[in-house]
View 1 (cartoon, helix red, strand yellow):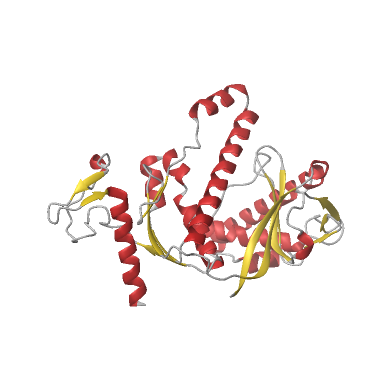
View 2 (view 1 turned 135 degrees about the horizontal axis):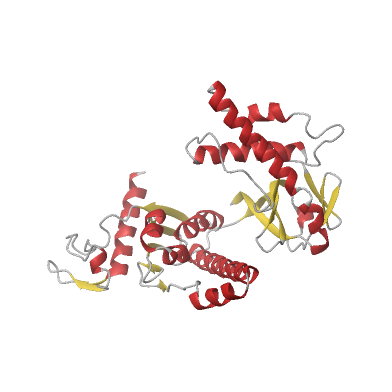
Length: 347
């Protein structure tokens, strides 16, 4: 089976080229702030919400002639597109936050703007050297951006199309997956992936007492460890099983209730990674609602299990109707698998 996949490749920019990119950041901020003021003016005075096509009309000519911006016009168009998306996410707020010197460095670009040749990324007249671990010359770069992290390091992020041939590799059949905080992932066959606490409060406090840069470096290390664990776990699951049913847990509610513990668990990121990895390895992924999966006995269907925050400590329970002894999470995973089978049969 040949699959067309769009992947984002991330490579670090070499340090001597940071200055070139830093000079472009004020121009990106200027364009964002101009669009922000223009959009606000049109809403307040003309009752008109500008689309990114409308905004492109006002940006025409900004990259040509004397005193022109050094940005490519596709970068201006991408800024307009992202601005409109952010405005819609903010429920059509007529003005968004302005970008200033403390805003993260960010230089977007559109199709056919960036090329890779002889180890250099070419953006207009700029030549930027990167650490190329992917072999960028094999790919056609579509869209992407240069991004600066809080420590001042620059990265090149590019979307590329890849045509690859994959076949089904899973040999363990089907599995239901229940996600939680006590145990991160519980499978219907009893396999468990334990919760790893990436946030070390003592280390963070120690870094905070030294300097802001030490704290930012610690947060970056946490992010990298979490991302690595997510990739390894999602790859293991996608490769091992042909049919996966994942409980569609509400991540926002979990974060609201449990804070950093839910952030560490990264339920949403795990589901997103499973989506493209199951497609890549020829598996089927279904998201199933988790309502009543914990309190329902998978053997007889009676709803007698523990429920509510006050009963989270109960990890095993016995069904009074049929006498089955259940592990709380394994039982929920089996119910999730049953719901996934039903939804697949009804299609």
